Image 1 (cartoon, rainbow, N blue to C red):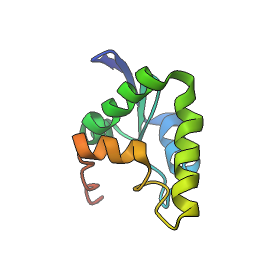
Image 2 (image 1 turned 45 degrees about the horizontal axis):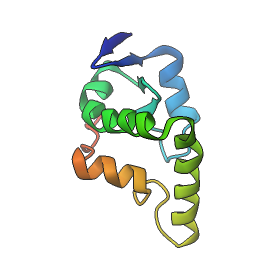
Image 3 (image 1 turned 120 degrees about the vertical axis):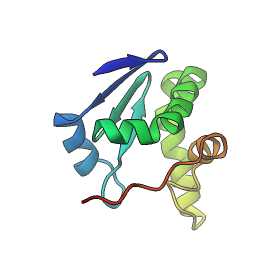
Image 4 (image 1 turned 30 degrees about the vertical axis):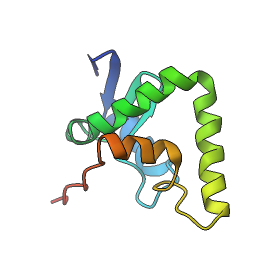
Length: 108
């Protein structure tokens, strides 16, 4: 665990397990942001996705506690219209426009 640019970053252990099992994306997620906490599967995941996840930290600063329900509603809206609930979500699109999410590195 470490503090970087006003956010706490953590990885491995239970965060890794949670990202692999509880995130409703195929294969889970490499990193996720909850307020000022960025959780990654590994330290390398955090390095790879840090800029993208920091945009989500800024979204939390703007939206506060409303971000989680707003994010969920945005995903539901996109899904109901036939889009991808993750990639077409307005919050993900904002983060990708500023810091495109890198392609995951091939695992050995």
